[in-house]
Image (cartoon, rainbow, N blue to C red; front, top):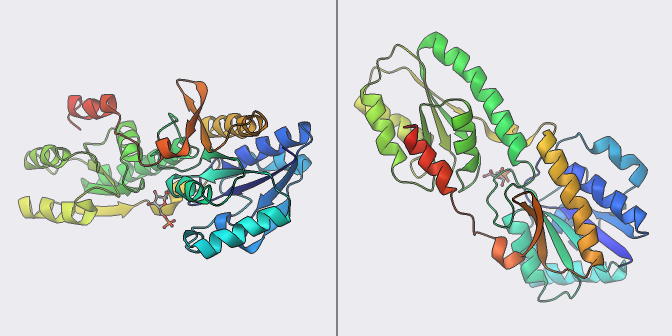
Length: 319
Ligand code: F6P
């Protein structure tokens, strides 16, 4: 391997820059040229390639977002777009690709592999933690910490006013952020897309709610009912309650990466370069049980399952 191209794609997540730092270091040490591709697949199609200077990369380890910028590309869904991307790779004599992203990014690489014979290695970068093949994705831990930090603040005002708060957290169709943030703040109820029972538990609790305290509900954005409908159902049961909805939104994607996300980025970044040198192709690097593991792309996308033990914990704690 003489020349690696690297890009970040899909929603940015804290820890992506730490991974870029480790990739640039590992490439430099192994005398491999490295090109950064800006704005994910969009930059691949446009030939938007930049040099990543290894001696400047340690300055970005602590920063959220991605210095390479990112995008969701509809052009890469077309064969025409993918042909342009291949052309740019060949023109620049790039002979391997590292992609940092989520589900959509790896699906893109799977389709691209039908056209392009270069080896690809993926790094799981999404706050949603919705990929198989790794215990944690880059950004998940930071996002949960951000959510917890913000919900703690909401609790202060909720307790002062004796209000019910429904707080929507991100995660697309996955309830991981909601479970972890919800348990971490001692929420009264947590609503996740993977279950049908948590709403029933919530209504039971609301029936006995005395309006003399705060009541915190953490709702995953992918939950079947969602915050608004849940709020109206609570109001139907008890029209007197003082209720507010807060959507934490994109604040969860920003901010400095946690220690865990920095280490994850650095471990997986360095591992992805080694993997390409060892002849790996079309696999995602991940950490399972604290061990580095490589999993084929087609086994990581849309394979996530709710962690049964955590889900049981919600029931045990009647949350
Ligand atoms: O995949 C990360 C994520 O933040 C999801 O949690 C959320 O549903 C989605 O991206 C939001 O995407 P966008 O920033 O494109 O609106």
